[in-house]
Image (spheres, rainbow, N blue to C red):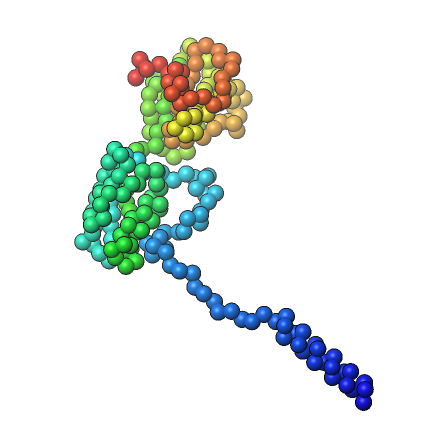
Length: 240
């Protein structure tokens, strides 16, 4: 009789323990929709890393683009970015947009029009914008500004500029790349060695806004970072 009582108590304690450790099911809550999602744009941070490897074009003053509304065509418009970075939107007013990519601009417009309409569906199409370019300077046959089309390496850019002159020091070609408004990164490349060895593994791809200079005299040392305002000292303005 006593053993049966002990077994019953043990079973009761086990049942209580199981009941305490089993979590109660909680209702699933749907994430609230955002204006950006309503416009068919990914949420911020959805493509980090990709944007670092392949930077998107950023809106600049003077750019123009079409703004198309899928369900409200009466709001369709074409606008131009003013020198101060603002655009003027119909029924909304002025909105600052410079420095934004097209997806970011789309989110900005969705947020703005979301105040006067429900779940706006907006598409942005660039019409006139700054074309990607690079600048060739120094001892090349045709120094100047060139359109950057697709993947272009430093040696290919030199060829586009007419190649080296007889006075060039192509073992020390300077490549300048803007880091921000205050600083520009500078690197020296031995193009002569790459060409003689027929090994272009170290031939860098240019990015929009890059500038390379082929010197006439040997450059022994150069700081890797220098003020952007001082970069022009390596160019010859008279050539342009």
